[in-house]
Length: 59
Image (tube, rainbow, N blue to C red; front, side, top):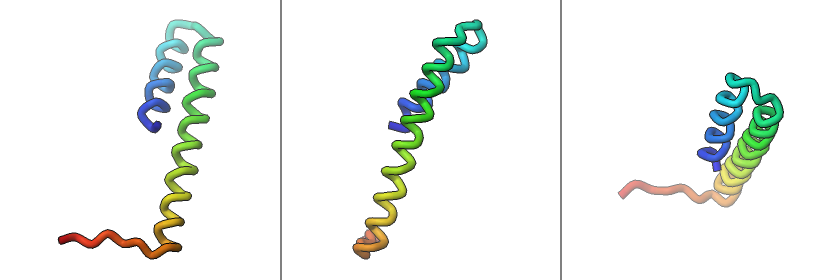
């Protein structure tokens, strides 16, 4: 999901350089939404691992 956020961010930068304002704004909003979803999932999984006490042991 983070990969998609970066892809849309690159699309927004390229569209901004060439002057396509509407395309750039749309791509930025999609990239921001995907990044925040990724961040929320990461935090939730981190907190779940702390609460449940699952620790990966190295062999």
